Length: 120
Image (cartoon, rainbow, N blue to C red; front, side, top):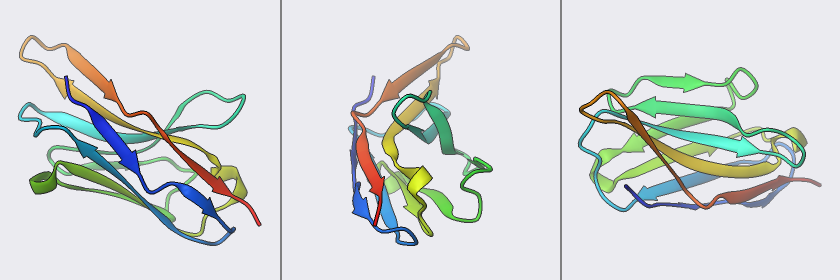
């Protein structure tokens, strides 16, 4: 198990930018995918972006061209740079670590979430 701590959320005006950070309590040596999910009130949690330990990224169509995910393995940190923010990006953003175990199963760890509010 790994603990994840997010930071960087807040209130921003439409068109603004934020950078979210997620720090893991330890380095994950097994193959893994780090991701950002979000959940808006009354909606299901959805994947925003993910990056594998091999640096393959996956970006949701709704944020493609505006959001960028990256990871710094030396710092056990994954980032989400969010540009051109829209009111519909308002949600709680959660960091996720999905680790592939030797038996083929996966383990999911979640952060506590950070609120992002886009409003004028």
